[in-house]
Structure formats: C-alpha cells, structure tokens
Image (cartoon, rainbow, N blue to C red; front, side, top):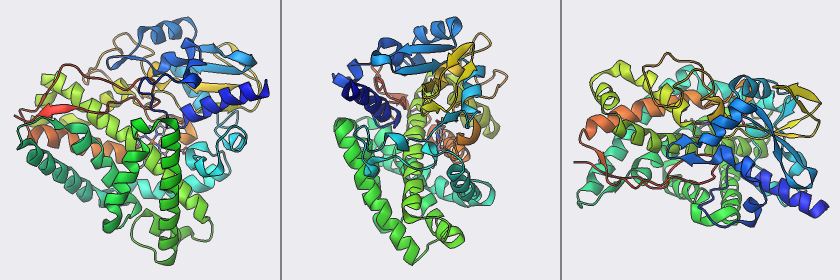
Length: 423
Ligand code: HEM
C-alpha cells in the first residue's frame, strides 16, 4: 500500500517539477492518473480542450479521483485560483518532505524559490528581486537586443541553404538561454556548454530518467560556477549576490537559485517565443501592426501570455490546514493543482480566442501571490524585443507546414520544432 502510494506521489512530484516532457511515450506512471487529472495538460491545437471549460463551469474546484485514497484538487476558476495562490500560509509549496521518500534524491531536489515557503522564501526572494527590476533590467536591454539580432543573422544564414529554418532551435531556445547567461554572468567561454546543458536538460528524448540526470549535471555545473564566483565575483547576478549577500546565503542556495532561474526562464520563454510566432503568423492584422507601430507590442504580448498560458498548471500546493475554497472542503495534506490556462479563460465570453484589442484583465500566466514569477519583466522584455524584430527582419516569414505538432501532457505547453520559410 505504502509503495503504491509512494509511486503516485512520486509521479505527481516528477510531473510538477516541469521536467516531464511526455512525447506520447506509453508511461506506466502516467497511466495511473485518471483522465480528469490530465485534462488541464491537454490541448486542442493551441487551445485548452473543451472539457476544461466544461469542468470549470460545473465545478471550479473539483476533486481528482486518485487511487489509494490520495486526495487532490484541480482548481480551474479565476477567483478560486487566486484564492489558492494568494494564500501561501494555507497552501505550502515546500517539496522537501518528498525528497528521499519517493525516489527523488537531494541532488534532484528542484530547490530554489518555487519550492520554498516563508521565511526562507522571503529571504531568498528579497535578494533576487533587485536583479529583476529597474536599472538592472535596463542594463540587460542592449544585450537582449544584440542576442535577438544575432539569432536573426543566424536564421538568415541558415536559410541560404534553401531549406526551412527551425525557429525553435535558431530563435526561441537560444534567446532565453543566452539572456539567462547574461543575467547570471556565465562567462563567454562557458556559454556553449551552458547552452548544451540547458537543451539536454529539456531534451524530450531523455524522458524522465534522462532529464533528472540532466538536472544533476546542470546542478554540478552551477555549483562549480558558484564556487568560482565566490572566489572571484563577476558583474552578473551570481557575482552581485556573492558581493551583497555572501554571508547570508549558502553555495547550495545560490546554485538552487540559479537552477530555478534556468528552469523557470528557459522553457517558458522559449515556448512563448515559438507559439507566439505561430499566432502572429496566423493573424495578419496584428503582424502588420507590429511591423508598423512601436506601441502595438505591449498589448499583443499581454494577450499572447494570457491566450497561450504556457505554464498550464502552477506548482502543486499542499494544504497546511482544513480550508474551504469554491465551496469545497480541502483537508490538511491535500494536493492542490491550479490550472492557469483554465483560470485565464474564466470570465467574459470571448476569452477563448486571441484578441489583442480586448480590454485587458489581469491574467495569471505569471501566477499570483508570493510565488508570482520573479522573471516576468525579463520575459516581457525578451518577448517585446523579439517578436517585432523577427517580423521586421523577415516580413515574408511563413510557416513551412500546416502540420504543426505540440507537446502532449507537458506542464509547460510548447512545440519542439517550428519550420519556417523566410521568403
Ligand atoms: C513567458 C515566460 C514565463 C512564464 C509564462 C513564467 C511563468 C511562471 C509562473 C506561472 C510562475 C509561478 C508558479 C507557481 O506559483 O507555482 C513562475 C515562477 C517563477 N519564475 Fe517564471 N515564467 C516565465 C519566465 C521566467 C523567467 C525569464 C525567469 C527567470 C530568468 C523565471 C523565473 C521564475 C522563478 C524563479 C519563479 C519562482 C518564483 C517564486 O517562487 O517566488 N520565469 N513563473
């Protein structure tokens, strides 16, 4: 009984670590979950499946029927999701009770901000926040410009062969990867290694085992980098943290923070860049507006964030007390999953489609509450820079196929290849 229960918790733990990139592989673990638990991870093209909307209108907080009496809830309503994500004391994000108990070793512990509760979360987040605001981000802006221009040059070069260019490999993945290198202060000579690590880490074919291996490898790399920065602090974020807070943070915490930024900032932004490009190529008016008007981009990015909601489900929360949400009684220890894509389509009719002219309403694509994405402004900066540059540099860019395929059952929704012609 205990073993089976452990396996299910293990599955949830691994799923929620955003590492599972199920490429439709028949997976014994996945098959243990009932369909109702998979609905928030399923899409129909770019849209969440209709079942998600039906579930939300019927029961915005609904119990997932898991085997062996394991209790979990799926929250699909907007107000209900904010109620859960906004109550960090009642809904804990701390994963550490799973480490060592369900097959996750300390080495594979995601650590970092996303899996930490106050007071540690408050302490670590306070150190990180200045790196993501105001003048630090403005300092990064010219680097992001140069990174995007560099990738566009690479795309132009690749297109000379006459074959379609893969927008994921040449544009969507390298831009956030190099942006994180800039942010952290990864030395130039290490960047090829860093890019390889971040790509293998998310390599689909690695499956769960392979990807967990890549987590260990990247943690080893990051620990080593932290040691080097401790000895000789550079200008990047790790160097700054060592200089400003060196005595208040351990090497392991620093490596965990860096790892959290890699996990949080790479796949999410890459997915937004690729899927956003698809939407823009399918909406000629928006595409023209972005080419012609500098002020068109901000509402387009916000609507893309809401419409695509690439982080489909927030990290799981664990109830620390009995509590009622959306008329349901959640008991201490229950697992709560917030479907952000469900919540972002809750409300006025028409939220199903993409419409950047719609009056905006705050969306939950970056989450809500104390764990709201710390990299939101960096991500916005990357997206606001990259889309217009792409469309202006290649005004005739077009999808090279109608047969687009998307990741299945992945916590971060996305596509692994996007062939385009540049005209
Ligand atoms: C469009 C791109 C992005 C999206 C859609 C996104 C989405 C999210 C969401 C939904 C959360 C909250 C998860 C939860 O509450 O369970 C989150 C947290 C986080 N994100 Fe992002 N993210 C993006 C880009 C980035 C970037 C660029 C970075 C950093 C380089 C980053 C770093 C983080 C970190 C460290 C957290 C944990 C924050 C905390 O727990 O206090 N993200 N992100």
